[in-house]
Picture (cartoon, rainbow, N blue to C red):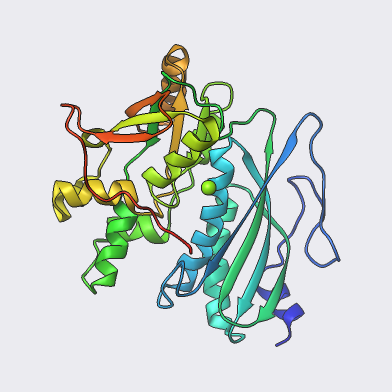
Length: 312
Ligand SMILES: [Mg+2]
């Protein structure tokens, strides 16, 4: 089957609605950006053997490839709208493509994201997506100020635990595996951040590494209380406190949001997040020192591992 037939069979969907003027099948897609809104654009590549194990189910790969891109939109407070997909495949494996597109569209349909174009090529399994979102107001990494409070959504370290268990060929509890294979992009929470949060980022490479991006861009420091990090029961049951803290700080793939909020806007933001039932936890404070200090609430320093995932 040729490239066009494969695209037609597995990826071409009715492209009406959501501002799509011309969808899949032409040289470019044409979309309509609503007046007074801006486009938020992000791209991410997943490489087999680097970002996911070659044994990962195709539907999980399809889901996650989109989830990681939507997570970047969430981190800036964007409403997802469109996506393009460049897929490099070792073979034209139709059952694989059917599962991949099933996982992909499960998440795309949930957020009404339209696939508006892409490319299919032959080579080692690689998936590149570009996602487009709409914003009126947005939040960036560079607005944190000394005195702001640091929050994270949900729990941290579960995806890291799944990776660690898989690496040692240990069984992975389903509630942990789903956090690795089907991370939930925090779109609804992200939409609450503009105008209330001072800075935000999604946690893809580990909390310490990603919070450091906020600190660098904002030219501030932070104190984070390690014993305040939100940990799931599954994580604290599976490993010691030391290991759980280490995973929460250094393991990637959580795709939770980390944001900072001035004390004067904290109450309003917490109320907004409560409306959408998004759990969040205050883990520390922004300081003027331009460094990240990890300690316990009793003042003791934390000496565990904090290095996040490094690509090079
Ligand atoms: Mg990101």
